Length: 123
Image (cartoon, rainbow, N blue to C red; front, side):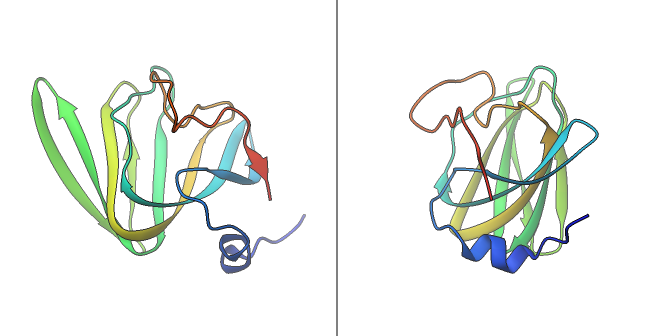
């Protein structure tokens, strides 16, 4: 059993949109990520994702039945994106997020491109 200090772990990297694994339980990864700007629209066919804001805030865009909407998530709040939901996180300022999702979840889901991170670093 090892405790994890979120501030220390978040202080150990500065790259954006590149999740880092900080824990694992019951087939789930606990990840930390920093980002600023817009991510790509994508969805995950089989995985739900939890986004917990450690520092900052961001908007999560959704596309459902041809309609787009956004939800703002602030420090201390979390949001669960259900599997199959097309979404895109956007942050005006740098935001620090704790992610909880099944091991093996690709950060860009059904889309592959320059923002895709195939091999996650464990910190």
